[in-house]
Image 1 (cartoon, helix red, strand yellow):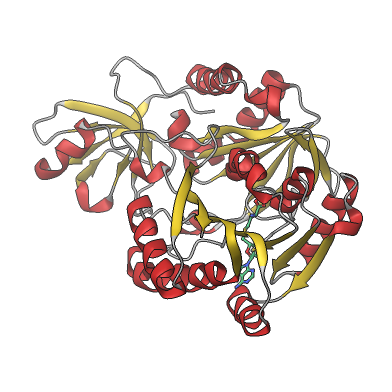
Image 2: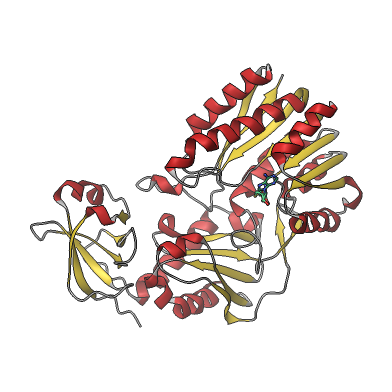
Length: 400
Ligand code: SAH
């Protein structure tokens, strides 16, 4: 069991010291001058300057592009069991302080660096907690982490969904399954702002549901009440259910995956809207064009595509993709219709995304007003010294 004693020192290159002092929690391999001591992946290490001055403490993984994940800048803070317990408890305290458990039983309890717990994501879904572990340090703490989560929240079980690409970069293999308590059922029913949703925590995207969009679903609800709404890149149809509650007569869920569309239908049904949703399996890029050619029109359109720009090199292509779907959507809206549009690419800033929408509006020959700016839900807080924690941005646009 980790006791928090540093087993080595990581010496930072002089020109990179400033980043550590400015509290960026990642130390990249290019910033490391030398690793001293017999360190194993997952050990606690001290980060020091060339002259030996103590700078920070964190967890090491010499095989990673980010060999140190800094967890504290306080020299007296030990990274031990008590530290883990305190960080979990503080994360829970913050969620309660924000009133999140009053609005929903599905929320992010731990958002890694933003909760000062690098390497861990923990999402609550009613009686289950789903964790993602992506550093060797947290791998070693898996059982303890689950034990603490059981103690803190008293769920029926803690389940692991460590099957995403970040793990491969840390040279860790995928892992899915229960850690403690009961395994979750195939579908967990959650309640969000008074609506019910079925979540597949075993195989769904991320840990099962797009919790980061929760507050955006509520904020866009009043704009989605028109007769005919298109929910493109629908996943399990969450925005559709809000639209139907708002009074939309007909909502089309559009996604490439037949499986998620089935769940989207069930989600509409359990909220009493079975007859008002339609599923359309297809590629949004093509379907939007088909709609345009057929002269279809909508009162509101939601565009929530997957991350188009996973790396810096893919940004130009991603921007072209965003522009394409957005200009098509603007074309398809009736005058006075609403476009609720998102980008979850961290590499694309809100300013860049706004510029894309401007270009799209010019091409669509429509006057477009931004009426709301959206970001990720408050249980995914943005840590100022870690700009990478911000990724989701959106706009509600009134398309004249
Ligand atoms: N708005 C959803 C989350 C959307 S995730 C929510 O709040 O729950 C993005 C979805 O886009 C995924 O379900 C994925 O299957 C789908 N998708 C990816 N590429 C697509 C494409 N070219 N056309 C249509 N859907 C696509």
